[in-house]
Length: 386
Image (cartoon, rainbow, N blue to C red; front, side, top):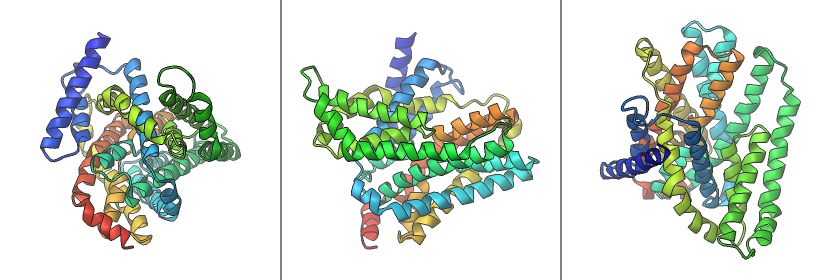
């Protein structure tokens, strides 16, 4: 059964991606939608499983690793101010929007605060693929989005720890949480500075098949592991690993050999698995709330992050593009929702609603990016002129 599952996923994602491109949209749109169609929500051909979850996690790690390989580290440093503004705006406005909706539907203060925090999360894995398809990965906008996503992840995790320590019914050592984040950046910084070069020089010359790509993947999974152990999303560790390898002479070979591995099987499984989380059972009475939360989630992140970009020198269209790239909540918000459910800060009746909202924000992101960046040469020209 496992082999037929993989067969269906690969065939359906490739066909759906092709149809999406023919319709003038990024291929990732079709891959996300086909996950909803063949998953439990509609046809039920494939049920989510632990194996699919594990393979999809490898897919998103490889996707972010490739993004790191293609990112200009110097440009990332230059974009720090813009990234900080984008991340801050992309947290403040969604937090306020989520809190207000929470109080409006009758949540008490702790639950409304948690809802605002959940809507503040960002996951740019889908945005990365859309930007790659639009040939925008080396642009200033893309670099700002990636930098903002890292900052957003750290800020939201620290805020989550703070909220859990006050309302979650358990003691959380904030100093320890912040220290662990600091340790991750030390580890990532060391790997970017010297560590990755040492690992590659040690392992790449081994007289075994594909030693270079294996060495690169060792760095990728090592930093993803370190990130998760220190309370940072594994995708941030994978992205940092890509940055580290990009500073070595092995960058081109790793990238050239990794893309066929990633895009042949692991990344398609990740895209289609996003749709597997959608379920339409028992949400008939919640359609209004889903619509409101989805609109709030999209607009607050689009406007909040976009305003941060605009205030730091981007043109209006570029700012909207950056805001669009921050809209997807992805797996980061799903993890936070699960934590909220376990701690009592998110009631079961709202869990499914928020899962659907997260999926909708993920589905709409490629459409928004395509709309804004359809004339990317004009966008690049305006950005370079700033």
